[in-house]
Amino acid sequence: MVVGHSGRSASFAAQGHDGRQRAVKHGLIYRSQSGHETLLLVRPAVSNDIVGRSAAMTCRPIFAWGVSQMKDQLGAATSRHAASSGRARRYMPWLTWKFLTLALVAFTATWLAPAPSSAQVAWRFATEYPERNISGVGLTTFARLVSLRTNASVTIANTFDDQLKIGSARMFQAVEDHRITGGDAFAGPLEASDALFGLASLPFAVQSVDAAKAANARARPLYERALARRGMRLLYITIWPSTGLWSSRPIASADDLRTLAVRTYDNNSAQVLRSAGAAAEYLSFNEAVAKVKSHQLNAILTSGDGGAGRKLWDDLAYFTPINYAIPISIAFVSAEAFEALPKQVQDEVLQAAAETEASQFELLATRTTENYARMRENGVTIADPAPAAVIAALKKGAEAPIALWKTKVPVEAAGIDDWVLRQN
Image 1 (cartoon, rainbow, N blue to C red):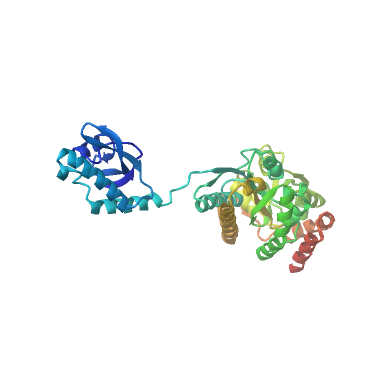
Image 2: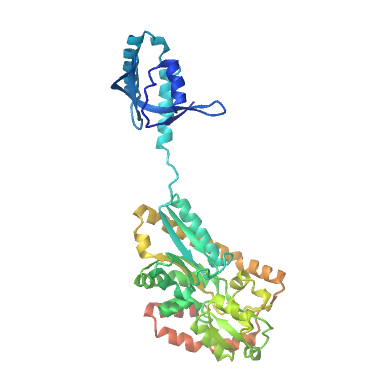
């Protein structure tokens, strides 16, 4: 017999075996098809109502009620009714005090056990990149950890692959317009909001994963302040595999750069490619893919990760790993939505963010190797290492954008770039 509870009123508790049968009939005891019974445990109190010769008992739910009190009241009710009917031995022979004690203990343990919380807060996040891309993987991991850590009191519905038509450059505005609660944005396009966000994608500055990790650790407080000015809260940073050129033909020399109609991911990269003779256009990723398929573009500047995620090999069968930058994406949430959470839940969300960032960094260790394997399996020719003449031509165009960027950012940000360049 399993113990539960009920708030129904009944007058069966003091009627022995007959009362038990009536309790089954009226739902105070549930008997399953397998023969197991559930006693819907109640708190009895003698009522002033008299039904026939039986003392009616009002049944209330038990939550924190002592066994001795229950025994006393049940005993008193039973004795009074037994005296009037002369059938004392037939009163509740199936409910011994020993069983009652065990039943109450079991019920109390069950009642006090934490139950899964229903979702109280639902957030909506977005990225313009596919679910298998490193940005999409981060959002999936974060949503899972938040649900786990908050016992599903906060849930996140993710949208991928620019389903909402909100590119990285427009994500801040989308949060302010309450279209989304947060998202994962490629940092370069956010430079339109604050030049600081162009730091990680400066041309030929960060050239190793270790340097990228150190530079972003130094820049983190600056990112947090920049996001706060827009009413956002930084969650985690994802470091991407290094940037290369996907193209429809091999890029073997500086002259080949002049044949490119190429998508770039920010204004600085557009300026660098133009200085090398390419026809460069700063576009969101989905806009670029559409233009490649319509033959308006024959190249895209992105990492192997971005291209593999969108299967660029269908149209662009060559990849040149020029190591233009080791860029980042930034996951953030509306500060208003975050601050509306209880402090304990806020802490759990931030812990989920920290775990996601660590997971993303671990993912990076094998990501490039895995991407290259997928690309080769799908017929992509990878020119690794990139031709020295191509790198030299591109680096010539890098000096002016970096110098201009430094005039737009705080001294601390310019200092981070100077530190990075000294590491090369």
